[in-house]
Length: 242
Image (cartoon, rainbow, N blue to C red; front, side):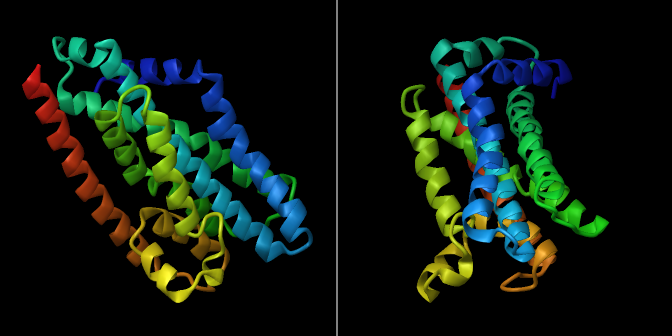
């Protein structure tokens, strides 16, 4: 992976005001709005909402990398890069690293607002789990974003990303409390990476309906390996056609 290429990618994305609004400002605004409507004065509920919006921001930022891949393919930039010393693995790793780097913004900002503006108080280990844990849990979403970017066109990548992100957020218990779901829907949510990402942070603020951290990591690792394998196969297939 080329560090210079990663820096270049991050600078390109940061020039997009839509990215800054949707993936950085939107989770913070949603958190403050939800707290004002549903959880004012309830410290447990505020902490749970903080975890949910942190997870949503990290997921959206990681998935956003798919749009850059689709635009690279449309502009012929990906084909040009294949003529340079940058390997396919280097290109894919740099894109995934870019998504993860951008996911740092909501992972830091939402908990910071939770602590400063809403008075959320956690131990050091719990804060580490809410921030670093949720950030690392965004890895499979960066890979899903890469896959979307490889199969979608520049025109269809945004609706395809929304079609993946919104059901993931709803069924993963990020926008809907998991204890409000019917039993059959809860079974569906248990196979989604968004559920396990939220569980990583949720386990730091409540024991209700939380799974063990080892189980969270195992599920996210399975998603990472499965989606990563598909991404590599798809990239090799595209490269063979050019």
